[in-house]
Length: 180
Ligand SMILES: [Mg+2]
Image 1 (cartoon, helix red, strand yellow):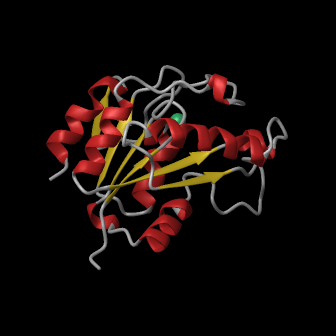
Image 2 (tube, protein in one colour):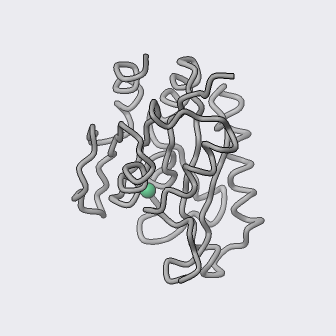
């Protein structure tokens, strides 16, 4: 079986509207970003796996449980399934940013490497969409050739990405030009 290319998506600020300085603690706080579902559907129709890679240290901080996070992701997947746009896999680092034993937190490429091994992905043809520097750095560390940054109001863009968009509403049209 030939390895598949993938598009990796950061969650907060990309898949769903940024919760700002806080956390999405329940499904009620989760709102899909404009145009995101169309972008996911496009990836699928072009034969790309879609993989969510997210940092959720609200679990590590005890603000929510792993079960709470899993429930949000179950609801998200259910909503996306009705749109034929569900993620093929979800990877979440729930460690505290201060945890010295954590190996998965961005900009570590660990979540991308795990996804590649578990889903037979071709990273040399894969992309990442993120809004923070550590998303872009993770992609660079994993050797992805293409990165797309969604500009965030609350975060300076210092690590250069291959492409930069002011918002998610034009993501599907950019992917349409990038994905063969
Ligand atoms: Mg983000």
